Image (cartoon, rainbow, N blue to C red; front, side, top):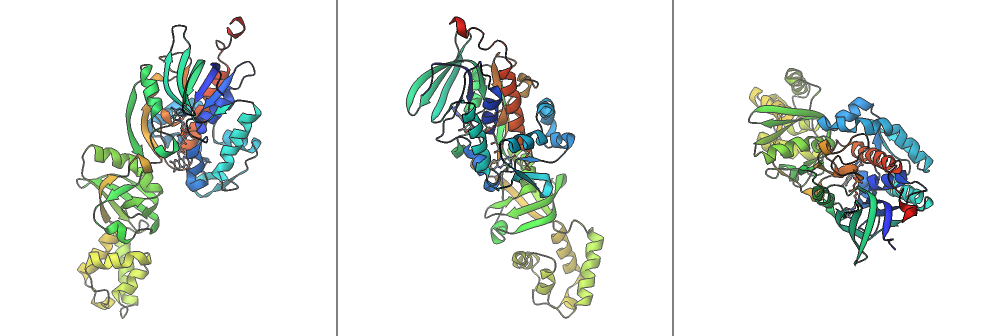
Length: 429
Ligand SMILES: Cc1cc2nc3c(=O)[nH]c(=O)nc-3n(C[C@H](O)[C@H](O)[C@H](O)COP(=O)(O)OP(=O)(O)OC[C@H]3O[C@@H](n4cnc5c(N)ncnc54)[C@H](O)[C@@H]3O)c2cc1C
């Protein structure tokens, strides 16, 4: 059941909202967490393929760099609550964690739901109600300066007033989890600007059937470079994967923000995969020559086995148009050059990107210029706070985005807890 008035209302029970509600707890304030779905934190439950990559071991400066230029905004929030604070917090909530490759932390149980349960238990312990199926459809302020929320609760309209409100409604990605961008509409109603939004950390689509033919193949220790009109834009070293329609995996997701903005600007976009980044052209040629002279009686297809994942061999043979049964001593210099070029610069034309349905995060959101980075309070409307993905920050894969949601949620919650103006008139009413 919803009361007609609360001191503090947090809208959206994702990681940012769970944290903000806990940290807003003040025995003298009434706090409520409203969630439109049947369960809190549906997205957190599926994060990290159900394992939840909680945070990253990286130091502050390189961590901030993972958010691009906008990382600067998070500096204060991280000074208050950063990766190791989060790990200690989770340990206190009885969620042991473990460190994996790439500095990534996961719950020891490999279950994202353990994290949701731990936060929900803490909220229950503090007797903060989490009201599910409570969909906030409108947020305004009345003449007395109170927030007025129109809520559809289990299908019935209810009006709730509040002294302070925190919007933690997330972005637009994976809308089936409840993140459908409603926080942007609420923020706009208070005069906030919303910077252009786009799917980010999203798989990209490539031309033809190349990807489909090697669907499921994962490539490790490779470099992907992004090209437009014969100019290299950027490159990344790491891991990627072919899908039915294109490419995905850590480095592709990280490059996707650049790729999406280039596609939006209608640029011609190509990626080139360097399958042998440890060898420059000269060294790779020497290696090919060695293979050819050491195994001159072997056929061409056999040599490819030592250079490529098995599932890519047929594709290479077709693209190179070299007889796979040809003995190595018959391979010409020109054919060897074609093979070397394909190994170093395997080209794929990028034709588009997946939709928000498959994007890990949303880029863009409530403009950072209008939010106080030391409190997360709106600079335009007092007692209105923001945290999590609804604001205009998004990072790379590796636990950065959840950390940002929890840290900004922590800061917003603490600011609301310490808001001296809240609750002072309650006894007089
Ligand atoms: C598949 C997937 C895997 C991911 N894996 C990782 C990972 O391993 N590590 C990592 O760091 N990041 C990961 N992310 C990103 C991370 O999950 C998000 O950045 C994070 O969940 C954002 O938290 P949030 O609290 O801001 O918003 P959300 O998690 O989106 O939560 C917002 C909540 O608000 C509710 N809501 C929205 N509108 C209303 C309304 N009008 N009224 C009431 N409630 C409302 C929604 O139902 C939702 O529960 C992943 C994302 C996806 C999609």
